[in-house]
Amino acid sequence: MRVIYIDILLLLNFYITYFLTVGASCLLHRKILLKRRILAAAAGAVTSLAIFLPALPFFVNLLLKLAASSVIVLSAWGFGGIKKFLSNTAFFFLINCLYAGVMLGLWLFVCPEGMMYNNGISYFNIPLWMALSATAAAYFIIKIIRRILDSKNALDKKYTLEIITDKGNVTLSATADSGNKLTDFFTGLPVIFCDLDKCRQICPEGVLMQFSEKEKVTEGIKGIRLIPCSTVSGGTMAVCFKPDKIFIDDGEKKKEVEALAGFTKTGLKGAEAVFNPVIL
Image (cartoon, rainbow, N blue to C red):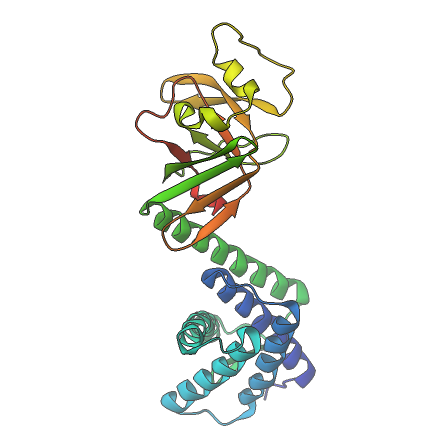
């Protein structure tokens, strides 16, 4: 007969639920306040006491899981309307089922010493470092999946880019390109490549001087960054500056981003602006 320590059970499931909600928020792009994360984790810890119940029929256990997920979701994100509530519950329930499936597989095929699984609740009597490592790895995988999904989704959309400086503002049609990985070494800001002709009216004089045959200057201009880069035409130098504000609009929402506007002599060949979808 295996022994379950209630304090370990509650602490373990508090920790697991905390990261399940963080993982769901990552997939949903919906932030959770720290106090709500703790409240949701506490709710998850309490529901873990279902491990002491007799083995429940599948559909009863499913209803119990749905009810528990709903309580945790309300604790984490609140209600926010039926559509948002159902969306939050679905994502959290999906992640919870994936986790439960992994735990069931371990229990059936590996059955680690000190592990128990009942009614979708897992119990481990394992070292803390092992639990921390497993959770960190799972969260890292979720982040990678989210980034891949975001990149693929971004590449299919049409965007409008608005650049604002003290000279005025311009609006450009923009294309998402994951191949544009250029960032400024010193500031860490990504570079959005823009068509110079479309942006002349809002560019600092220093940028225009770099492309002037008469007044070509290579260094010492305040606010201008010269960044080596590679294009299909070969190596070149990107002339960059930081606008006051940059907005990217995908037709559904408008988001302000932190980035540099960059220009090259080779131009963009048909595009008005190109950015890496990661900045969204």
